[in-house]
Amino acid sequence: MSMQSGMSRRGFIQAGAALSAALAMNVHGAQETPPVKTVRVGMVGVGSRGTFLTNTLLQLPGVEIPAVCDINPDHAARAKDIVEKAMGKAPELYTQGERDWERLVARDDLDAVITATPWQWHTPVMVAAMKAGKYGGTEVPAALTVEECWDLVRTSEETGKPCMMLENVCYFENALAILRMVREGVFGELIHAEAGYQHDGRFVMISGKGDLLWRGEHAIKSNGNLYPTHPIGPVAQWMNINRGDRFTRLVSMSAKSRGLNYYAAKKFGPDHPLAKQRFALGDLNTTLLETENGCTVTLYFDLGTPRPYDLIFRLQGTRGICMGAWDKIYLEDVSPQKEQWEPFAPYMQKYMHPIWKDLNAGSIQSGHGGGDYITVHQFIQAVRNNTQTPQDVYDAAAWSVIVPLSIQSATAHGDPMEFPDFTAGKWKTNPPIEIKGVSV
Image 1 (cartoon, one colour):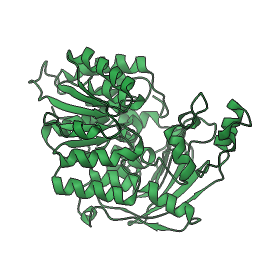
Image 2: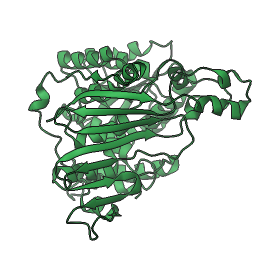
Image 3: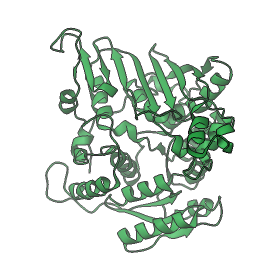
Image 4: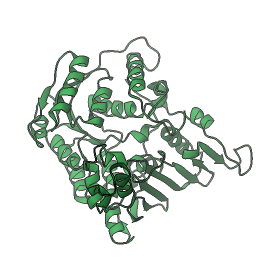
């Protein structure tokens, strides 16, 4: 499978059914497993992404959704129909204004709350959920300001409740294979990585009717890397960030802003208000990060130009290099031809992560290739077993804080910005993420 793939709803539903059947079997080959403990999830925000997460949750055995919240009654009604069809009973709806999620969070029959709202609501919902004694699962980024990142960390520490940012790219097949290769020393000592969220996202900022959408509102006022967690999540896990190393500083610069104006003028005419709107967000942001152990990461963010989707995924160590966008690899004294690339696919098969194998994620042949399913599965498994989530609140903070730090640096023409140590030094002794399969 290519490292760059899109998502088809039909393919997801078909594969989800297959995965549900597979999970009814014991991962070690037994014919059946004991009944699983029911996990009850409240959904806050069921627009496009929230609807997708709702469908994904309902593919998992033993998951119920008793409550759904959305400011748009049509979105809530759509989610209600989906849940009722799957569960045989309708969830209670919360649609009375933008803070009605507070009533949902206060329910005593929920184990977890997942939010897929616009970005500015992620931290408030998660903080309230943890304070109410529930696991928190949030779409990306988890926070928009440095203080919000600290709010998440402090609340999780004070309540003892985990908060997991549902970063699906960490569970892409190639990202998991590279993680296993790193752990087995295939690349030697890591030196540098390059990654980016590069995706023509003009349509998510300006609607087909010419209206400015909520992401576009962020583009008017903020200039930096507004969406760093998809690329930095896997890189942080490869480099053991918060688990043996940490990000220490960054510098960030943005190119000029032209793409959204050009897009609006092309679609709606040169006199359209958005063709003349001044956007703060540069068309391409470049952020350079440094770690305590001397590694560097080049991070790109590009939503404003016409281009194919590309996460880059270059990883370089003392023994070789992987180029994800090319599906190529070169390992010194291993690759058959000196200084010649070879295909990555055989390595992805050889170093398949046990999670990928156990969940039969390869049965999904399109889209995120099973990454979304694994993400939700790992969150629900932690809730069910009352254990820490595999991506913890410190990850959520360290990956999300790139948003405000990059804005500060870009505004200051590339001045360096120091990273907070959200772990308070625990990164020095925290063990790396284990390479292990699914326990049932």
